[in-house]
Length: 301
Image (cartoon, rainbow, N blue to C red):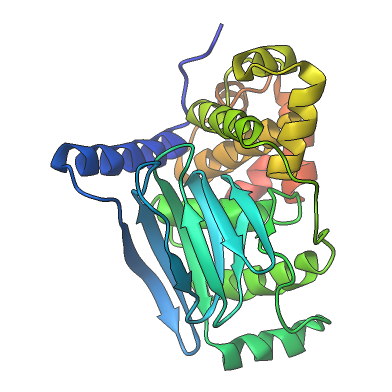
């Protein structure tokens, strides 16, 4: 049985994206992007960007005016740069070098939402020097939903949902983490048939709608029309993580947001986020975020 539960913060973000796409369709207009600046300082800024482009919109080439790191918090899209062609999914980080051409497209679903950090090249070089990173640019165009970036993604999600994070600190920490992690990512992977990528993308969107749902690998594979082995391999190649890792990280992001935004008991947050018991939740949460759930709540407060 598929659960109809939805974590409030993720539900709010998903609903807002769905409404934006629906308004665009009702108006019969082409897709577009709308951004709200959340914070800014000397050399950096952060924006909440909602995109309503869909399969019927023709992609076009753009160019990054600054160094860009976008945390994907909703939807999916294809991101192509000279360094690669990637499927961006919730929890992943889109990377762009200043002056770099890029193209975004939405072949397999309409709309996405990102928290976009932008850095002037000179300011970014200061971060690079202070962090001790070896590369002076991103050699890959995406970081998948990794454990190392999970705390940063959760803080960005909470900020968009109405929290008040220290945006400048988050901007600096995100840049330093992205520089270090990008250098360790593979720069090439085998290509996949477009049909298989489409099936996995639709699967990701289904998981995103309700990460707390009880689903098995066999069920996900059957819904995608693939064998379990082919689905596991394809999902991992497309997203950079296994289906289990993707689902657990989505649940933990939802739980982290609830812990900060609500006063509910930890056991209720655990069960409503899709975990079978609070002990499993506590272990998973500590592994992902480095602290126990209550300590995370106190620190964020």
